[in-house]
Image 1 (cartoon, one colour):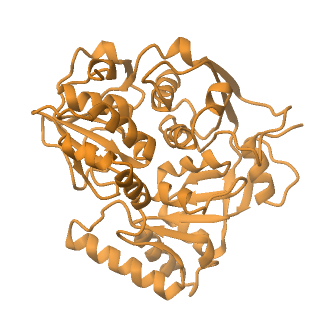
Image 2 (spheres, helix red, strand yellow; image 1 turned 30 degrees about the vertical axis):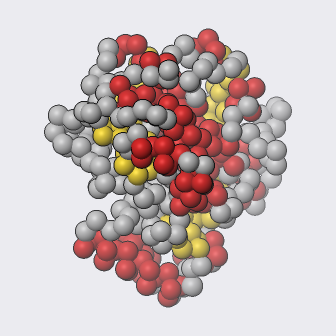
Image 3 (cartoon, helix red, strand yellow; image 1 turned 180 degrees about the vertical axis):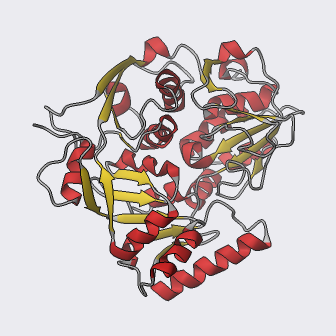
Length: 406
């Protein structure tokens, strides 16, 4: 019997010839990633009592959630991580100003390769399935065990295969597609499953757009998610729990919006009736890449952000920031009234650089809109594509890009 991508990768990593859904395997880890929560991992690791990590070359630590440090507590955490990195000889450490958001940094520095087993102490580690890796989020205690012996047990997930055909209508993107899918399947529709995206529409997407699909798959419960790569693929006779077929041109008639306070509370833009917007956020590990900044710059060129709306733009990495500067995107966005934040996760996780007050409404290209996610529990967050975020910043309300493109 053939194997899915998840089964194939976990079988290799556990030294088996095959793996099937619901079997428990102990897999060797190819890459272990942490951000600021590396300090929690460090503390658990110290309690285990092992002097050295199993392989410092396979550990990557990236400071991104609270950068630069917004409090003395965070500064102390950063200091402790830096000391641990030096003590353990961990070379792949990306300090403030030297990297960016963890999932972007892993990708653009070549840390992830097809067929790898990647674990990260961040739920959106699924992003790296866009490169053919079995990539899953784990907890700090689990990561301490990985740092100790380089292995972790997994229950082999069953797989949902999603085949997408057709062409994306103008102004619609991978973000609209994945929000639509989450709306159809629900927040638990892929619980502890792997998801394989394929089909002509997926294969025509950029790598950056494929990362959006893998990233947000976690919001429907996926353990891992994959988009096609040449180096590895599922067997032709692989068995799937479910196959879902979507015609992008037929189902994506207009932009999709995840409304408060759940990512699966998805509605077409026309159903929202010009919801006023206090803040627009463009960035995050979901949509802070160069193509996202380009589409915003294209819409905002020669215009001004609405007087009642704040536009915050966060490049996903220092490298993207620099390239966007060279291409003129940053200048265009600043001239339109945007504030450019350093690469990081600040407002997305509600800790600094753009949190919301009670009663405020935000349209964001990020990945979660739970109660209190970006600040006050009495604020509201709508999730949308970069094009809709930019259009809404101009209009002062949730708007279709067609309304402002002229």
